[in-house]
Amino acid sequence: MIHAESPSAEEDLATVHLSDPPSIYESAMSSVRSPPSPPSDTPSLFRAITVTDPRREIEAANPLPGSTSFVTYSVTSSDHHHQALSVRRRFRDFVTLADRLSASHRGLFVPPRPDKSTVESQTTAQPGEFLERRRAALERYLRRLAEHPVLGRSEELRVFLRAEGRLPMAGPTDVASRMLDGAVRLPRQLMGEERPAAEEAAQPARSGRDMLRIFKEMRQAVVNEIGGARPAAAVEEDREFLERKERVQDFEQRLSTASQQAEMLVKCQHDLEETMGELGLAFIKLLKFENEEATCDSQRVRAVEAKRVATAAVKASRYYRELNAQTVKHLDTLHDYLGLMLAIRAAFSDRSNAQLTVQTLMSDLSSLHGRAEKLEAASSKIFGGDESRIRKLEEIRKTIRVTEEAKVCAVREYEKIKENNRCEFERLDVERPQDFLSMLKGFVQAQVGYAEKIANVWENIAEETRHYATDRTLSV
Image 1 (cartoon, rainbow, N blue to C red):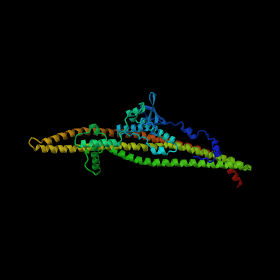
Image 2: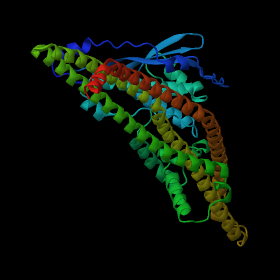
Image 3: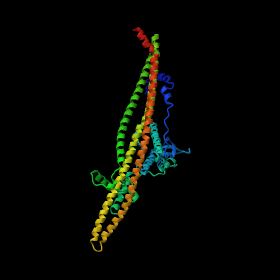
Image 4: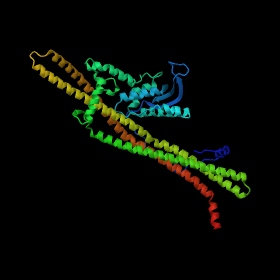
């Protein structure tokens, strides 16, 4: 960035004329058109989404001075019938949307939402700058959701974008409340007075509402880690998935390396921008000195030449600034895919948790069947049967029926997550080459186009100052 040290220098910079004719490269590339992307089989319900007008508001429940304030954003969406609707949403509503999508679409690569950076909001020199960054991040997040073939048509996103007034979706219960609820239920579960519904068993135990199952799944995880016997039907045998998982891990490492190199490139171009700007200022100062202290024609001639070099240096500095902005724009695809890696890991975690639930329920069934067989054998040895053993046997059989239903739901959920993983990998295989090809094409066009502009600047200077080399040759 150019730092002017005096008002007069800034005025001289403002007089520099930077208009240029279109470059040959730009003219040649203007005729090149990328082939249109194939239309999606399940287009999004929304054709355009914008987030604007951040506005600070006071909590309605406590309007006293000094009360907690929050920022709301105007979210405008238009459907394919060009019907636009605007609603106001606060950041907490975005958190609720993200949690609901993750819970209802397990196994999908749900784009991660922007983080709530309280520290950054307090330390940023310009509060408006922080709000603008967050606004842009939230807009980008919603557009990614809308572009997803499944999430873009989800009921959660539709309600978020179209429901007027306060968001009708209930926010997530905090972890402490869920754990407290689970602790209250635990004694009744241990006494056999309460059993979870089959549908509840299909959900991840780590939600905290079923402490007994949390302990059982922790035990099963330990058994898996130390190499104990696992239910054969629940062991991950999808070789294609395991190979894809390895490729994703390798891709993430390469992506991280490429992202670091992209940041280094941006820094180098920024340094060039500042260096060219400082060079231009130095020649402007020389120009002013020569004009103010000129006593002969040679000094006035040097002043004219100094202005030419200053103009060229400032032009080059601004071109480097524009180039850097284009570089950040195109190489931001790397950062987008780094964020996608978080979503992929979350989908893998959904799959592992669902598999662990199936393993735990199958282990429970095996244990229950063993207990039932022992009670049946013990009861058969007593003439007329043992009433207490018969009651226990009936309770165990009832528990077996409930656990069987839970296992069926858990297996169904696990298969659904596996299918979601497979579909997402297929989508990624199609979109990733297109995204990176577009990124590289834009990056190369920017680099070559601005390199040509900067070269033309210095070629013009070389042409205008050629007589110095001629005079030197004649003098020799």
